[in-house]
Image (tube, rainbow, N blue to C red; front, side):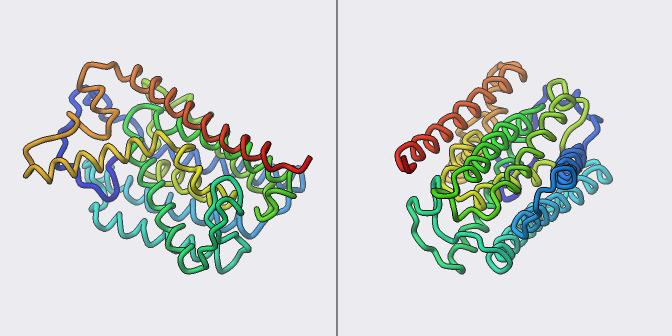
Length: 320
C-alpha cells in the first residue's frame, strides 16, 4: 500500500510481486464489517451499554475506511496503484483525524492529559485545543504507519491483531480496576470493541496469510490504523502506542529515512534498497514468508514489552 504523505520516488517496484497482480482487494470491508457485527451482537446478547465515546470511535474508523474504499475503487478502475493523488489523500486523512479528535473532546468526557499507562502518568494536562492537535497527529500518524506496513501478505493484519489483543487486555484491566484507571470512559465497551477487531483480524488472516487470496486494501489499512490510535487515546495509553505498534513505527520510520537520505544527496543515494524496510529484506534475498514471520516476531516482542510496562506500572501503584 502506498504511504499517504511520502512519495515513492526513492523506490522501484518489487519484481517478485508481479505474480500478485489480479488478486482481489478491498478485503478490509470484511474486516470492518465483521468487527462491527461482533460488536453489535455482544451488546444485543449481553446487554452491554453503548457509550458515546465508542460510537465516536466507530464513526472515526468508518470515516477512514471510506477514504480507503474510495482510493481502492479508483485504483481498480484506473488499474494504477496510486489511487487518490498522495497530497489529496494526505490532507483528507489529516482533516478526518482532527475531526475525530475534536468530536471526542466535544461530545465525550475523554481525559485530555498526556498519558503512558494511565491518565495521571505523566498526567500533563494539555487542555482541549492542544490535546486535539496531539490526538489528530497521533491518529494520522498511526493510520499512515499501518498503511505503509500493508505491503506483504498478512503483515499488517497480523501485527494489528497483536495490537488489538493488547488493547483488549488493557481495556478490560481498566474495567476491573476503576480505582487506578477511573478516567477511562466505559472501559468494558472499549474491551468489546477491541476484541471485535481482534477477532475480525484473526478471521481475515486465514485468507490474507501468504500466499494471500485477498488483500485488505486501503479500506482495511486505514480503518485498522485509526482503530488502534483511537484505542490508545481512549484507554489513556497514548505514549505506549509507540511500543504496541512498534513494527509500524519501524516501517514508517524507514520510509521517512529513505526520503531524507534520497533528497539530501540530490536523489543519488538510498539508505535502503527499497522502502518500506520489509521490501529491503526481500531485495537482499529473504523469502517473503521469512520477512513476514520475523516481522511478526518483532511486533510480538514489541507488544510484549508494552504490556510489561503496563503491568509493571500497575503492580507498583495498585492499592494493596
